[in-house]
Length: 207
Image 1: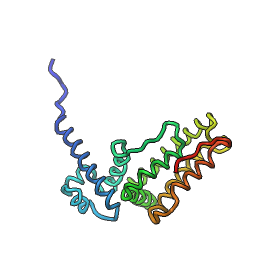
Image 2: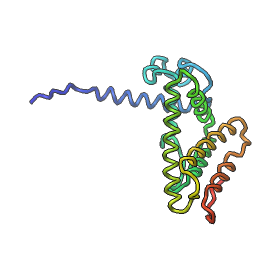
Image 3: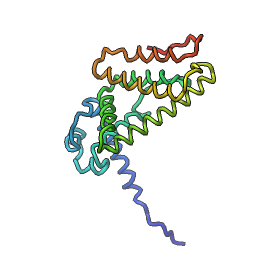
Image 4: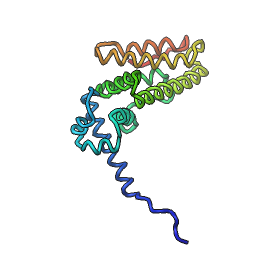
């Protein structure tokens, strides 16, 4: 019986995915070094080493490119964090802060995206920021509940409020560090971790 399915351009599709990934990897290097200063897709294309047409073909707009660069830079292939499975939410943010110190340009890119999300006319940035915050709060709240059940974290605090506080503290301290690298980012996060521990536990977050 003849195959009714039309042939799919598997080779071209795979090449397109590979080319997009190649552009993203190069863009991560560029933004890690220079941050997200206001610029155009055309200027970024020159720095990445591709045509403006290629960049718009794969990403559509500057905002879509910036979100893609940040999300890809946080993929396991680009992050080298060693966090135990039973780490508290604050411990996870401490390790993330350590990693981020090596790529200040990407930290600045993230801050720019969040700032854009608060302005009208930036739907891609707004979707990125609101989704990221909602996902982080949900994951951290679940971790807090689990660790409260095991007696590691205080049981007199609301898990959802703790999750929101941890995210706010991490982002706020990261902004302070961008403005002044002497700001006690790790020390403040370690203090928050100790305040959330159950009384009597002698575990402390590493600083």
